[in-house]
Every structure is written in C-alpha cells, then in structure tokens.
Length: 488
Image: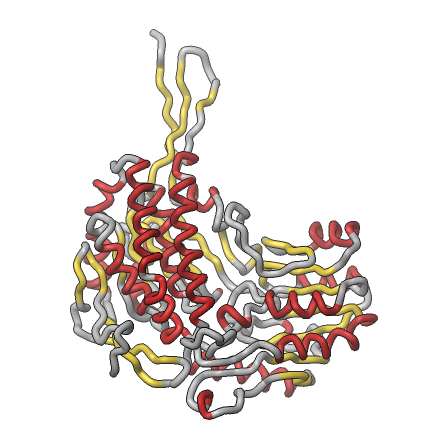
C-alpha cells in the first residue's frame, strides 16, 4: 500500500471525538477503480463499535440540543468553511476511491458545503404553531429533535452525501452516527477528522464497515430516526429491522428507472445534450438514481435522434479519474462493473442492439480498471429486463412510441417513480405529462438539475420523504403539543 501524501496509510474511525480502531482490529481494503489495486485500508467495525458510537452521540445530545440555535448555525457554517479548505484533498480521495472524475468531485465538495450553509440558514424556520382553540387557554406546538440519528449513505457521491447527511440533523439539534459505503469510506473518514476540530465531541461519529454495521445501527434501541440512501433491497431490510427493533422514523432515497420522453417537436440536438446531462456520465459514470436511463422517442423522430444520441455519448471523454481533463471515470467496484456488463449481455439476448459503446475503452491506461464506454441500446421494448430494472451504470435503453396514452402507461409501469424528463415545446402536452407521470420530480426540456429549496424525493419504490428543502430539516424534529390554562 502506497501513500500519495493525500491518501493516508492508516485510517481510523471517529467515536466520541477520538480517532479509533475497531475493537476487533479488522480492516477492509480500499480499491482504486482505475487500477483495480489496493491503495490503503480502514477499520471494519462491529456491533460493539456501533454501540460505542451511539452512546457517544447520546451523551453529546444532552448538550448539543441545548446549544443556542444560532451558535449551532455558526458551528455548522464553520464546518463548511473547514471542509472547503480541504476541498482538493477530499476531491482527490473520492477520485481514487470511487472512480469519479476529480473535477466533478470538487463540485461535490462545494455542493455538500452549500447544504450545510443552506440548513444553517433555515434554522429559524423550525417553528411551532399557536392555535386559537379555546378562550383562557394557550395552545401551541414545539419542534424537538429526536436524539441520535443514523445516516447511511451510498458510494456514488461519497463526500457530498456524507456532508449532506449530517447537515439537517445537526441543525435540528440531533447528534449523528454516520456510515459511509464500504466501497468509498475514505472521504467520510477524513470528514470525521475535520469535524473533530470544529464540533463538540460525540456530535458526529463515523463508523465504517459492511452491512453488519448498518444493521447494528438500525437495530440499536437508542436510534429513533434513520435515513438511508441506496438500493430498494437494502431499504426493505432496514424497514423490517427498524420495525422489529422498535418504532422508528425512517426516510429513504432509493433507486430510479427514470423516463426521458421525447415528443416529435423537440430539437434533436438539445435532446442529445440533455441525455448526456441527464445520465450523469460526467459526474459519476451514470451511477445515479436520477439518471434518465429509459428514453422513449416518438416514432417520427426515432431514426433521426438515435445517431445523434450515439454521437453525443461518444464525445464524453473517458480518462483516469485524478486527471483534470477527465470527464468520465471508472465504475466504483468490480462486482458492480460486472453487473452492468451482464445487463448489456441480457439486453442483447432479449433482442436489443448495441448502437454505441458496450465495451472497455482502448488503451493501456484502461486495461485493469473498471471502465466502460457510454452504452446506447436500440430496439428496446417494454418487456425487456433493461427497460424495467435499474442498471445504475452508463447504459441507455431507447424505446419507440406512437400513442401518448401508451407512453404514459409504459413510463409509469415500473416499480420506481423518482424523476421524469419530458421534451416538448407544446405547453398543453407538458401539462398533461406533469399530471400523468407518477414521479416525485418532473423536468420539462431539462434533466438532472437540482435546486436547493425544491423538494427532491420519489414515489413508489423510489423512496419515502423529501430532501434539499425545509421539509427535510423538519423531518428531523418531532412535534410536541402544549396546552396551558391562562385563567382560573
């Protein structure tokens, strides 16, 4: 294992303000997706370590909840500033640990900091109500924190999700036990070091490891609020475990099989650019729940649009993630890379054609990494596996349609309902699609754009709850009703 001066030779967890090993001493390797080689390692926690982290958070909660609101906001803003000072280091860690391009990871660092600032600014909006229900009495509601919050985040945006995960809970007065993905833990561990110098001990704790760590967090009786971002399968297990362990408030941000619906009046070149943007090729190799991986093209435009899509996708520059000019890096870990390749094979067996991509890029620099060209599948039909299951990689399925009612039905037919992108200049058609699509977010003539203050969350199997908005902050509080007699 080699140190670059940025990647540490030895990583430790953060529990109660101290950098610690796991009790067992076990460690997991961190693999560079661009080379397939180990670069460092980090602790493999167990139930005992989780218990220590939860106890530290519970102890810190008594003080943190009573910290004046604007002092909490000042500390959270201070954390954002310290993270910005480490932006280059954190972006580099994510590039070598996740395979995402370093330029995108610099943006991820800033986006995480923006969310810290955003929720610090919203703090005074955690308001209760007064209700004029009866004379001589005062009826009011108070918002109170839950206590210890469990945040479990995925591998596709490691530092952004880690920073974002602690923002709303901290401002609501909770303390946090954070678990990053076992595939991309380095930047979260570095975040722990940064937070250690800014926040009181125990307010944020970072534990690392596999599924057993998440299960221990979810089942711990002191944790009453859980937020998870990841797969539907894992979310179902979390809900079962949470229900068996007690009555817990659970929010979930899950997968998507997001439709991009193209009407015949749309500009083909703008659609092609919109697909590249919507698929997040240049951000995380399309390892995104919001990627527009199902493109429904009207039959009048299909033959003209398909080669434009292939050309636009082919212009995305694949390279080594730490290079500044790289636009698309490597898929994050070997098993996932093989899973995506398998989906391409399944698509071909079921009758789809590879119009573009579908293979590793040529060149010695790509020989050992988990690289894959943006892949365009043509001739896809609604019953095919690639049209129904989330691939979570750079694979686009194109389907031809004729009837509006039929395309609406097909778009809604999958179990997911996260986002949709509609391309038309007809306002009436746009309005009809907005009303008809069973998704949590709809873009008209755009895709994949997020705006702080606009709720982001899914319908159906895509999740429970919303993020990036005041509602997220309020979800980390519980209501208490108060009734006071004012007269004899």
